[in-house]
Image 1 (tube, rainbow, N blue to C red):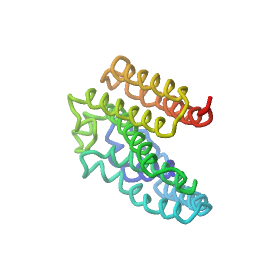
Image 2: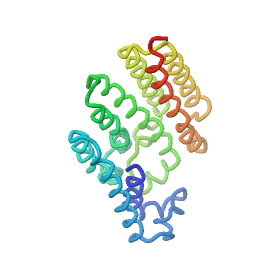
Image 3: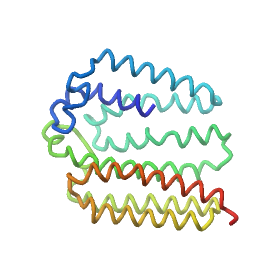
Length: 235
């Protein structure tokens, strides 16, 4: 579904992408792949996504259907909504609720909401930094982004988002009575990301893509922290 979302995004944005240096070589924008082939690929991905979804319980299927419109709306949000990265965060992290539903709602909704909100803040942070690369061209074209919205306060807001994200993760660990390993891992990672934002990325567009890619590692560490915290609760 993430891949399907990317295709939908590229279909909506193919005319915009062709005007931006960083994205003009994308397959649809450059004409390397036809719109027809992109749609065929999208249909195949949606078909397999539907097959997977139908293996879940009824509540999970309903949750999957509910979020589908936002997957199609997100690319349009960049043209009409001042904070499109928030829509992206809401969509990309919806799996938190589907996983909760598949697990038969064995955990309180309030705890799951903590995790979901934390993940949305994380997405808003890394995608804002990603958007810095296109900020000047987006302004010229008339595209909205959190990078443009935050302006000169960008670094301050990203620090607040990151601190809030990790405070929620720590609170989640407290509610679940996770082991101290969880708190050590999460705290250390939070410090590393704050260090990264302020001293490595430091607001420079040239450093944005590298920060964005490092979030693959950061996300893996968050997952590892949750697994360790849960499995070593009583150690």
